[in-house]
Structures are given as structure tokens and as C-alpha cells.
Image 1 (tube, rainbow, N blue to C red):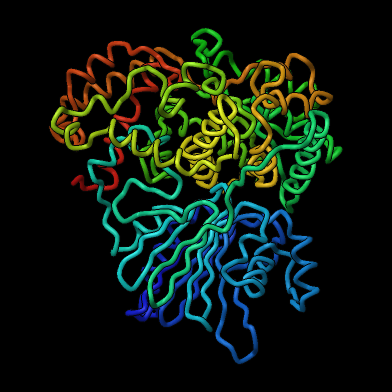
Image 2 (cartoon, rainbow, N blue to C red; image 1 turned 90 degrees about the horizontal axis):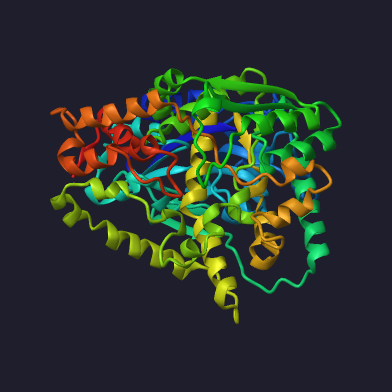
Length: 605
């Protein structure tokens, strides 16, 4: 994994902008601690920070090639891993391409030379890249199918800035951070943000599964992949065997690295299944990690999304698999202290304790490994969340994960609410996504509705989790791979009927069946439990106190936008919904947004 950035402007000489390019590149140093490179031409400047994972000696970037000795350079900056590198290398070699390295970077560059802007559809992996084609004077930017790797852009007349993170674009004086008040609903609940959207004015993302081509006529974005609905004709046994075969192939491919690889092991079905497959496929003891909190055995509170603690199950899974297990135990003071660093990692309002604890977990992981396998994405493709299995939430004519609990957006002042119209925004966003659901002709009733619910969960919720995982891991130079987001598995599962996905009357029946021989019953049948939260009373009180202090702070940029009475009422003790672990979880976005507005000098309009 790496960090990429660049600047295209057909009205400037980019060779005079090297200092700006160097600032943009340096901002991504944590993503690439192993090397740095820049490249400039009359109208384009490209920067790269490298995290060496495959071919440690080769693969330096920006990587340059030419179609002929006399042609203009074709230059690539690339962030990601291509898991079908062996097949692509052989295919391209058969077409006459010569390779000087073992890196997948060179495979990506040669794929562009062979297929042009359509090259991404040939890649199986997680990636974001930019290619400057000097012969055609085009800049091509592309992103993987599920949006695992980020790619932010700012377009303006005659030019474009791009970067793996907002900080690269913010490092350029052309971009000034502005927040429109109408964006506050997705600031307070980022699950409402569609992939490719952004909360800052003028800051967008290349959408997942899309390619953006920029030339003198402007910017043109097009999708290269989408889900297609078709009848599922495989029986139960064939379906289970197909899922198992896909998982084995995916994990095997994602274990390839020239650096140490570990697994994140929470003791849940997803992470334990991946760890079991990895251990079996390598035949070697696996290194695993989990996170827990001091006194969690005393203060833990069961909720629908977190019914039990991870730690006991993670230990049991480690013993069963024979892994070298490390339990990273954090106290509430460490969680609070990590908030500022998590904010800097995200460049946007963070998820509070969840970002902070994950960042500290990944920092510990990075001390022993450079690559980690994660179970992220399994719930979205196999149907693991409680809202998939709660009829009232499934039947509600809105995003099913919202539930009926309090919504932070209700804390806006009345005049701001009148302007923002959050309920109208929510209805419009929901209707827009429903219109994009790939329908299956003749499908109706629960099967049709569950296709909608699964599609909705593959949008905002999954995008948020993948974004968090990328940002917190790359902040410490750790590459996290997500086998459940392999597009071949996603494509297959998309058309498996809901009745198969809950065949035994529980969540993720199909995954459980596919790995039944790998896990003991206690782990195989564990209920879904989300990433852990601290329930320490002193942490909750600290968040509540911080929010109440914000209401009395005349320097707070958020204060005048809030209904103080409504905030105080929530702070007294909110009803916890399916989405909220506790009152601190619900209120944290207020503190994070206030801190972000100050730290980044964001202007609200």
C-alpha cells in the first residue's frame, strides 16, 4: 500500500510547482514510510509514498514506460495490491510486454498500456491509481470495485488535484475547506454518505468501480463494473462448496507478500474463519491480534449490535487455531488521548473511540507485521447485521440501520433545521439508492426487499467501515486486506437468495456452512458482535461533559448551530438504538465535528 497524489493543470507549467507537489507528497508520508518519489512534466505533477510489500527492491514510483523509444512517457502512481498478478503478467507477456520487476505496480502500468482507460476491469484487487499518458495528454484515475482504497479529487476549470487522502489536497493552496450547512446530516451520520460523495465543498472522490479521465476538454467519469442480478441456479450443496472454494482462493492470493502477514482475530465468525483458512493454507503458526478495554468485564453492557465481549472468544479462537495471539488492552484515558491523532488520520470528523482504539490497535500490529487480514465486509455480503433479521427494520421505508432511536441531527437549532431539511434529504437519498438497485425480473416480497436492504448496506455503511480501516491502518503504515470484499465473492453472493443466506434461521448461515469443518461450535455459532466499544463510566462522563462544555463555549464554531436544550436532554441519557452502543457513542460526533472545524479551519456557509 502507498499514498498517491498529483496536480494537473493545462494552463500552468507544473515544473514550477515542485514545492507544492513536495508538500502534497510529504503529507502522505505515513502511508508510505519506505520511499518517496515525484515526477513533473509541463502540465502534470505526480507524487508517491511507498509502503513496500511485494518486490521490496523493485517497484519504485512514479513508474515510467514508453510505447516506443520516441514516444512520450506514460507515468503511473499506484496504491494497492493486485491479486491476479501472476495471470495478468503471463497474459501481458504473451502480448509482447517485457517486465523489469516482480511488482504488481508494473503489471498495472503494462495493463494500462495494453487496454488504456479500460484496464481496471482486468484487475482483481484493491487499488487506486493515476496514469499520465503523455502521448494522449490524458490523466486516468481509477478505483477498485468496492472502494477499499480511497481516491479524493478536486476539479476546477482547467485542472485537477488528487490524493489518497484529503490532506494531500488540503496541502495545496488552491483548495480551501468549506462546509455547507446542508451537509451536516452526513457529518453527524456518515452512513448516509454515498460512495463517491464528500462533505467538503469541491472535494469529491472517484466513485468505487469507476474511472475518471481528464483531458483538455474536461473530466469524464464512467463505471467499469456493477452488480448484475440474475437467477441463482445452484443448489445448497453447490452454493456452499462454491463459497468455500472462492474463500480459499481469495485468502491464498491475499497471503502473498514479501513482509510479515497477520490476521485480526476478534473471535467472531468472520475473522475466525479467515484466520482458520490462512493457518491451514500456510501450514505455519499465524500471528493474530485483538483489542479489548480495561475493566470491560466489569462495565460491559450488551446491546443488539454488541451482545457479548470479543476477548474471551478471541482467546478461544487463538487456542483452537494455535496462533501467536496478542491482546491489545486499552484504558479510557488512552482512548481519549488518541482522538486527536485519529482526527489527523481521517482529515474528517472521526468516529471517536472507534477510530482511536483501532488506530492504537493497528499501531501495535505494525510493530510485528506489515500486512493484516480483516473480516470487514462479511456482514454486508452474507447478511450479518441485526437489521437484516428484524422485521420492523426491514419493513421500514428508510435506511434499515437507523432504527427508531434518537438522531443527532435533531439537535440542530430550529432555523438550521428549516434550512437543512434532514428528513427530506434522507428521503431523497434513500429513493436515489433504491432506484439504483439491480432488480431481478419477477422477484417480489421479502426476497426483493432483502435485495434492497443488502444493496443499501453495500453503500454508505460499508464505505464508512472501509474508509475507517484504510485511514487508521495507513496512518501507521499498515496494509489491511479485506478478503470478503473480493468482487468475485460479492458477485456470486449478490444473487444467492436470501432464504439461503439465513437457511438455519440465523445470520450468515451460508458462511457458517462453508467453514463448518474449521471451527468448534462455540465459535461457529457465536452471534454477530460489532467492533468493540468501551463502556467505562468515566469515558461516557468525559464525552457528556465535553459536549455540555461545548454548548457554553463562545469560540465553538458548532455552538450556534445547535439546539442547546435538545443536546442537554440527550446528554441526560438517550435511548440506545440498534446503531448506538451508549450515550457517549451517540454524542461523540458533536465533539468530533467541533474539533475538526477548529483544527482544519473549516468555514461553514
